[in-house]
Image 1 (cartoon, rainbow, N blue to C red):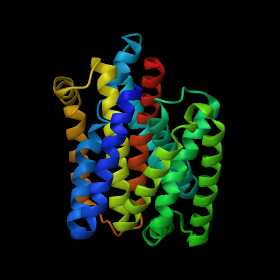
Image 2 (image 1 turned 60 degrees about the vertical axis):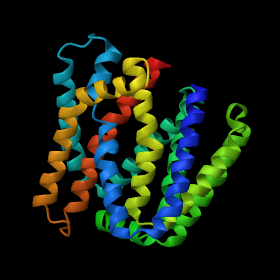
Image 3 (image 1 turned 30 degrees about the vertical axis):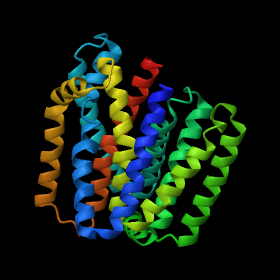
Image 4 (image 1 turned 180 degrees about the vertical axis):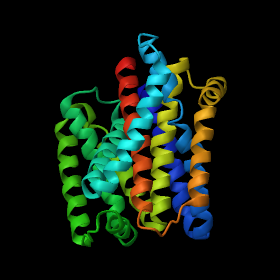
Amino acid sequence: MIFQATKNYQIGILITIVFIVLVPLISRSFVDFFSGFGVLTLGILHGANDLEIISKSFKGKLNNLYLKSILLYISVVLFGGVLFFTLPSISLIVFVLFSSYHFGEQHWEDRLSFSLFHLAFFTLYGAFIFFLMFTLQYDSVVEVIEKISGYRLGFEFFQFTAVLLGIILLINILLKGSIRSHIIKEAVLILLLAFIFYIGSLWFAFAFYFVVWHSLPSLSDQLKFLYGEMNLESFLKYFKHSLIYWLASLISLYLVYSYVDFKANYFMPMFFSFLAAITFPHTIVMAVMKHKNG
């Protein structure tokens, strides 16, 4: 596990450096298109096999498992939509916190077992990554937040929060003996991510981290959990089982793109309710998988 994590880190660092060099040389429209391609393929695919993971996790202990899971997903979609339309500011905060935990857990799960303290640490790490991105993409981020919540936050808020979270994160790593040895690797990664977050658009910044540093490692973990190893054969099995859900997601996104007015006031709440609908249940499924695998 440690060897695989080190290998994933090295590959991720190499990809990050390559993009830092190439992105300034390529048109922003092409970079954003490529970012969208990554999200629509590897990004969505990594969350398209949750039902198979649930099935293996509980090994048939739950009756009508698939039906219950689908109904749960639909319920979350509806609940997320209502929440974002009625309480947009609170919903956005909950969404960021939930996503922070999910990203942090994926990044540290091979080095830290689950506990309440580590849950807080995972959330802290993910929140730092988000606020580093928000600070370096302030102009774009503040417009999105204003459309959702009606509030316009100053640059100083994001800058101060990012610095504060970074200091707390550093102290926690230094005090935690089991991960103290990773501090140089993490510092290098965060420095490179800062370049990534700065050189392109907000869409590219999010898509790059989401695909390279979250989706790919998550796919690796899922393949090993479901099939015992990570190779082409196991990936093809994974793709076969997730194909229908992946295609359903792509069709849904196409319909949104075709019929929704992106400038309308309802777009941002609807978009984030869709993201929440994917994130909330997927995060729970991944937590269950890591617990069963741990």
